[in-house]
Every structure is written in structure tokens, then in C-alpha cells.
Length: 119
Image 1 (cartoon, rainbow, N blue to C red):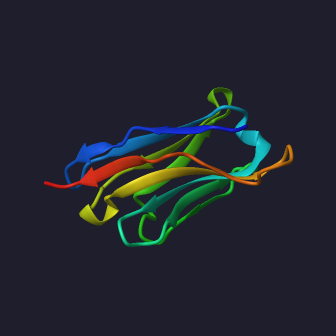
Image 2: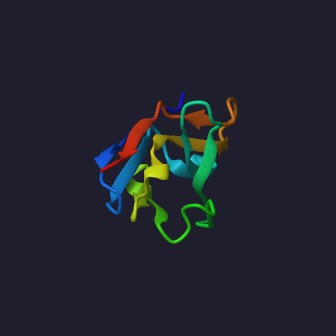
């Protein structure tokens, strides 16, 4: 019953910045955590950044110091601010909502937004 919609992807030069948005159809407080994952062809999906209901954040070593995750409770939206982008950051980025507190399906995924870092 929950839908996640990502936006904000696109083409950016190395060293540039993008902000991704994930809009949920319900309150993000209905999940234990929200996060961003990314995937390139032939590789497994990897966690980029997560934030719990209590506000605790975690980041992949490859993006620490460059990416930040934040949220707007009133807008049911989670953001990923990406700075100092590198070509290796090129991937499809997916929004994830984990640990649904209202029963049924535990986690949900968006359909992804493409980020391309190239000169």
C-alpha cells in the first residue's frame, strides 16, 4: 500500500552536485528506517545512506564526507544531497523504506532514478 517515488537524477560533471528526493505516500515515521541504495549493470545493489526514525544516519565508506541524508517529516520526503560527485558514483539510485510498522509487507522500493557523472 506504500509507494515511493524518486526524482532529481540527471547528468552532472565530476565535482558537481545533485539532490535526490524520495516522496512516500504515507508518513516516513511508519518505517524503522529510510535509505538510498545504488546499482550499476552487473553489480549488486549497495547501501549508500540510511536514516532511522530516531535520526541516526549511516553512510557507505565510499561516500562519507560527500553525501548527506535528510528528511522533511511534513512532506513525507527523504533527500540525498550528493556533493563532489565522481564518475564512480554513476548508477541508478533507489529509495528504500524498511521495517513497516503497520503490518504486512516489511519493506518497499522505488523504481529508481539515474545519476550519470561524466565530463
